[in-house]
Image (tube, rainbow, N blue to C red; front, side, top):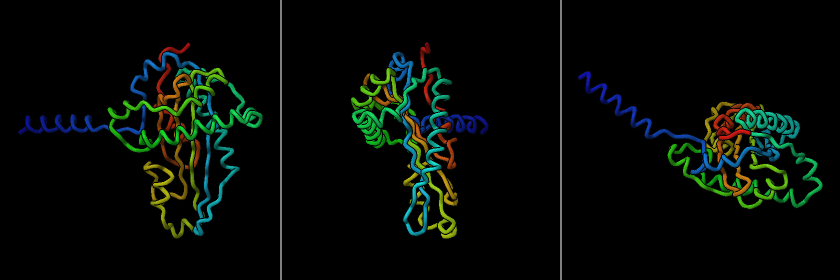
Length: 239
């Protein structure tokens, strides 16, 4: 009987291991790709925070969005350096106001990533094996941005959050729908008065392919960016 129990436990362990899932996505030849990626430029994060009301006339929170955007940049720079990458300094804010073509390219990359997220099922738990077999490109705009900035790769980020009004908290109608839309399946308690998620992706500046991507949900602050970037792969040969 003891041997049977041990065997059963071993079989259960193997079954659990074989069913391991993740929100992380990586390119199938990630290690090879990373050999030519030493420097990364950070595209300005998209930040959207909504004040959710009972009337449905939700309002953006620009002041809080500005604070979060600045914090995201700080976190991204720190995490990239911690993982061995050189962060390329580039003043996108100034460049985007003076260069319409660059602004268009940034929009193209963002839209390319949005389209790629569906193919990657980003935000959903899938098998670890499948998560490392996805070769998806955001298009040649990434190549042009990398060339313009002198970077080997670009990092894109999107932050989306909500803060419920007192009336909404009291009634709390439709929260499950709100959670589904904002978190793409990430777990935020239905009773939460606020929440957020961050998506991050490292994109090859030569091919436009997504080398790594992840998304994490949590509280309405910049800490979710830390969680999202925890799985960022290390530079394989930092200079």
